[in-house]
Amino acid sequence: MFGIRFIKVQPTTYLLQYQRGHVVREGTGLSFFYYGMTTSLVAVPTASTEEPFIFEETTSDYQKVSIQGQVTYRVADPKKLAALMNYTLNANGQGYATDDPQKLPQRLINIVNVHARTEIQNLPLRQAVKASDTLVAALRPKLTGASEVAALGLEILGFSILAIKPTPETSKALEAETREQLLKEADEAIYRRRNAAVENERAIKENELNTENAIELKKRQIRETKMDADRSIQEKQRLLQEAQMETSVALEQKKKELVDLTAQNTKAEADARAYGIEATMKAMSATDPKVLQALANAGMNPEQLIAVAFQEMAGRADKIGQLNISPDLLRELMVKREG
Image 1 (cartoon, rainbow, N blue to C red):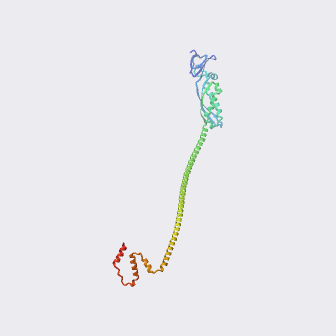
Image 2 (cartoon, rainbow, N blue to C red):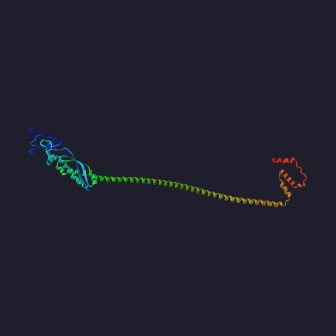
Image 3 (cartoon, helix red, strand yellow):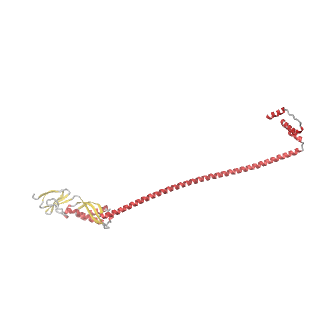
């Protein structure tokens, strides 16, 4: 009505009111009436924005990769941005008069693309697909200090790379190569496991053989110790037998000496008796036999004398006609004999 309009913006929108080429009102979260025929309104959003991106680049070994990520930014200097890009609202205050506000994210992504290209082109494919963190660490300070970003009045709040992927064909080739490498590593692991099992088996066998050898060695030592003990016992027995034999020899020698001495003594005694008998016989040879008989009968017991008498009578039996012996005499002899 009569060109009078009302506008109200959010606290995250910086609003500039121009009249006759001059800024008459500016700030965030403003609300006011204005005359649409003579007023131009510029609204610059200052809230943080997360803008995803994806673009392709070439690695140092001429392989294409796609880089996917996002950049978070906000407008730190709305007036500077409004001076470079057209953020003018339509006359009715609804919507922008141009498409410049939609171009800002792309301009920022182009800046990211330029800096990322420099880093990716220095990396081979295998390193590039695993260089997300390295790339973020290298690009973040460059974006924050980039003159293009500062000229637009922007502030980089965050930067991240979600994925770096090769083309599907290259990815399949890498997968195949990796699969082959994994299979090779699996085969090597199986070989190492089998080799370890064989080695363990060999070690077990060696331990068993070493144990058997140790047992046999111990048995041999026991046998040798027993043989040494037996040998020592036999040696002691031999020494004991030799000592016994020496003792026996010495004893037999003593016995021999005793026998010789006894024989000498017996011979000497026999010689002495023979000499005595010879001397006696010489002395008796000149004596009357009757005298000798009388001497022999001297000191005999009566029964001995009776026996001698019977002996003499027996010697003269041819001259005796009849001999009567009284029973009393025989009884007397028998009683004395029993007594």
